[in-house]
Length: 317
Ligand code: ATP
Image 1 (cartoon, rainbow, N blue to C red):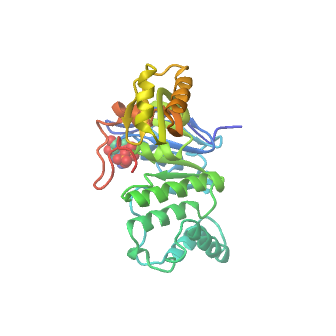
Image 2 (image 1 turned 120 degrees about the vertical axis):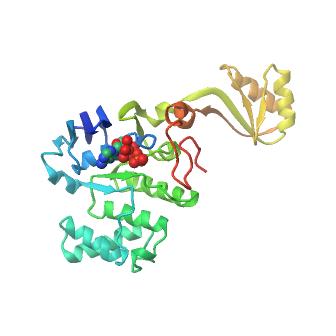
């Protein structure tokens, strides 16, 4: 079975600017993050996969077909552009019906499908308001809805959390996960925010100045460390003392006690110390690296956030 998307030596140059510099990668079904600082080439890659721009070199392939020579593949793709692109003077149902009809649905089916999709993105109540009166969060949802209204196999979402406050961002990421996991629509999520990718994606491809710098499963990157985090609901001081007596060196970190560089036997020592101290153990687990820690050096220098957005290295709130 061919990969869903494939970049083969894919390049796009604008004069001397190498927006994409001959990249090779594949994207399988599921939710994939395309992560990179501003200007890394993410939007360019999405536009090449949609056939909206032609590559300077190489091929963009969707389900085994070169998109440059077969524009019809676009019927199976949904696209949420980064920038505001909505007409202000029509309501959401009208706009979405129109988009559904453009993709070939008859008028009545398109209206039904538009109403369904608006319900899925949480805009049922506001569906007859003109788009010009929508908040940024609502506009992002309409943009997402128009990417889904024709039931694509794959949705390409360009910075879907741009301009959203923490609550709006959380809701948008939940929606994207829902689409990917419940509706069976694969997603490519382009973002400069590692937190977005970490929360939502199965795999990540990291772009840096037009090249792929890393790729792999998010779980593979966020590997377990040798740091152990212990939470107790009572008796933290007594447990700290008991652990010290047994040769460990716990350090408090908010509600947790942290043990660094632990060996296998630390789990047995903690168990015995919990019993001896009478503390009430709530949880004990190895800490995981976050993508933020792993990619801090890669993304930080260029990742100037847009106004009102968290920086690329900032953890989601
Ligand atoms: P952002 O999120 O800031 O859009 P990005 O990773 O999506 O970042 P691209 O928009 O793909 O980056 O741009 C990659 C590089 O190509 C940038 O240096 C950009 O200025 C340049 N570029 C993109 N489109 C054009 C164009 N039409 N003409 C000239 N240069 C372009």
